[in-house]
Amino acid sequence: MGLDEADAVPVKMEFSTVPGLPPRYTIENIVFAPSPDRLVVQPANDDAELLNTSESYTRTILSKLSHTPVSAFGENFEFSVEDPPASLLDVFNINDDLNERIDETFDFVSTSVISSVSIRGGTLNITRSFQGGAARVKFNFHYNVESAAQAEDLLKDSFLSNYELAKAILQSYED
Image (cartoon, rainbow, N blue to C red; front, top):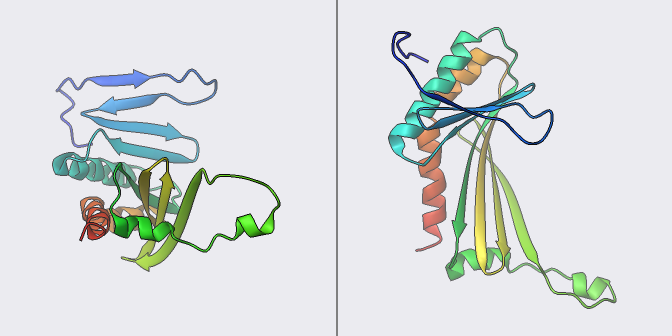
């Protein structure tokens, strides 16, 4: 990861109480959660420097393990909006005719709207959910690749850029 071998770097290991789940490692406020079919790299917060460091570490791992088959990668961001503006609530005004289709009394617990768009060489999946007066907006930037090298190239400068795009989309509801 570009760290000096002579420097002591604290590593926090967390073991799951669920049998079979691999441990998670935290290095410099970045969580690494390896499993047989994926590696999750998660910064502790949305600080720009930490986002860039997470991307750099991920690219280094892809470079060092260039022989490892990689078919896709994604970048995920999730936001919770406790008092959603009317423009965001409008997304959930859909013609749900469920009450006309069944002879039962019910209350809606939650509503979700999922959209997928082709953007920046990949697919952006946006899940907007409304439950209990709060909205959640999840952004998944998904990229299909044919190799670790291609993933490393596509990842360059994308993490912070995609995070900024997700924030801009979310902020556009406030206008």
